[in-house]
Image 1 (tube, rainbow, N blue to C red):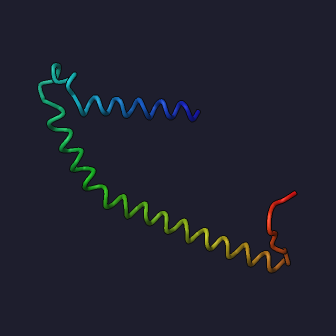
Image 2 (cartoon, one colour):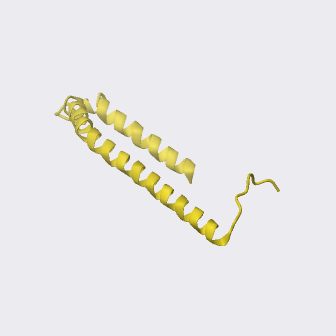
Image 3 (cartoon, rainbow, N blue to C red):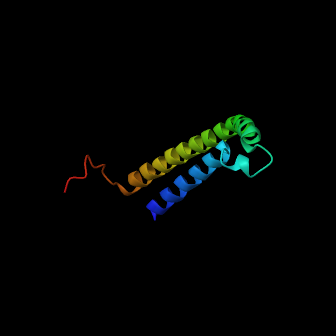
Length: 91
């Protein structure tokens, strides 16, 4: 299913590129789409970028804090049951 997702993503990128270029569609539509969509896309990306950085940064921080909390709980349980730390996973 991974290859299906890759193909779908590539198709979406290709269709988006065609619409942004809009050279082919200029003959069929009265409004030049590229003249409107490219500046609008730049404005949207510029407006969303700070918010996305804050959201993704917050998610990274939250994930790391949850990982540290889980590690502390694992160490606590290991001490409770007297489990010795293994140096490696050799069999």
